[in-house]
Length: 406
Image (cartoon, rainbow, N blue to C red; front, side, top):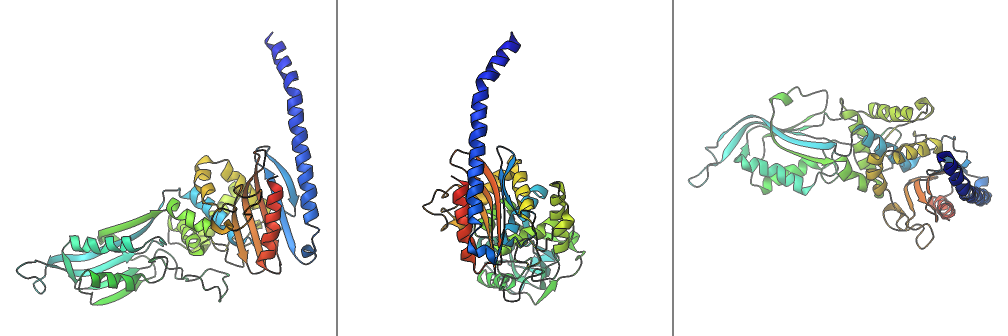
């Protein structure tokens, strides 16, 4: 009897399944025809394009045009960096900036008077940078307040900027000399290489007599951290900085996250951080030797990925609720915010495309997720290379996205 009812139910559902398959097939065929016609545009007589569209619900490729071609991903590289960081480090991983001292704190007979018994630090101050682009005014105030809490009004010693978090390279491999990007230093104030001048200003405002000398620690390990007395440590997490990094496509934020990948284990270098990303590529079932990772932001001209890899990465994120919950909201939304705020506005794609943009000279890319009119979820990647200008690539991608959501 149970078998009979199962058979009846199967027969009843068969037309529904068949209709669903027919509709899906018809939609796929219509999309293929639409995208094929778009590829007949004159711009592709002189430029290259690769597209891959994947049905996340149906677990199948919907459209593929040159998805195995190696191309420059531009800022779509940030998707790989963010996913690797969330996989390897987690959303709560902290970027640390530490204020410490070595020496003794004792009453200051020079500055003290009948009303105040000030103290002097007879020793050195150490500020260890952790490449935190979110370190700002509130954090600097916490540093100086920690000195005040100890009663310190004079530093009879030096202040050392400890830059041993990463290598001494100030720019990324394959960056152009005229990119005018921020310096890659582990000590940042409001995402700029002005930490020490701002720290000294903060001391002046807090009436702390400036130290007698300054120094930088850039090589190896200081071998003194075990002797440090920590006064204050300020942290920000991966989750806190990810939205700005992705929505605004901030290269410095991406590089700071990239270097955290290797700093979690040893002194950070681009090569070691790239190895962590290659490791994720291997986990995705692809050969890391077939790709090139040079930096975390996509600014380098040496980066080479394929749409196939990017979509495989997006599928991996979709299968991991813990990663998806952090990464998906950080992606720009068409017609709504971030680098997609002015794109696809007023079209069917508005609000239905969550994707990372990428722009280099003669390069425009877009990769992320689309939701169709019937609620189907897609992962897609579009790489345009050799285009006349960025707008040409963006216009093409916007039309493709409008076709995807129909």
